[in-house]
Length: 308
Image 1 (cartoon, one colour):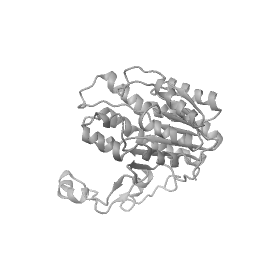
Image 2 (tube, helix red, strand yellow):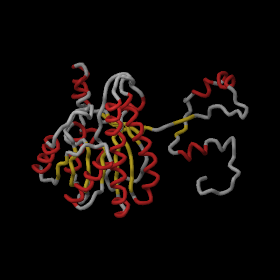
Image 3 (cartoon, helix red, strand yellow):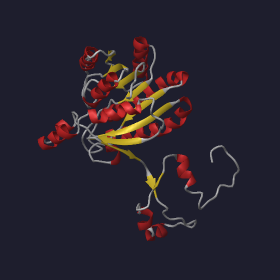
Image 4 (cartoon, one colour):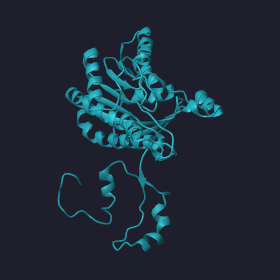
């Protein structure tokens, strides 16, 4: 059985929705939890309070677990420092970070004010990055860390979610890159594109909201969160779709495409079907794997670099 006894986790946006179920399951498996939730609106602009975070803390304590409430708003280096210091003051260490907090706006790309866009980007990307960099030296010094970045399928494009999709896409890049630097220290960084009933799905028409409530309970995403926070984990830099009991790896692919040293716009037009054909894809897990795809056509001749 996967247990997290002795581990300390920070879970952001944990006062409601999927963040709450992530925190509850982590606590049920033995982790001590800092429940962070600023208690405000999805737009990130309306202020909140500690009520939601404290309610989850009360649930965990009633079940025999250990937790503390934190109402700092994710989004700045200063708030990240305060959140991490709160966890250290309460529990003495940090082993796990679940970057779950997020906010969204619905409308075309030009529908929002500058402040609204910047607020969503801060919550979905800047805040998680700042938290990651604050826990990083702690995890590096202790030789253990698990970071789970909660992203969204909105990264793939859905319409009317540009600030949210852009912020989560930034988090995808952070996940892939931080995984490189963390492996030597057993800091493993992975991501999830979750599908689950949430405040957002509750704003949908009733039959859609009911479908989510009946089949996509947040707990079914939380099971993957717990696994990605465990000692059993032995990989990093990967991203998974999760929802309704389905777990599947999501990755970036390319194909053999076209190689023509005398490439022209007309040559591209004549071969665009082959260029776009993904019937025989190759996974591209890293920048270096992408670079190596060119070697079949342009062999490296510069000697040993430490990169290739």
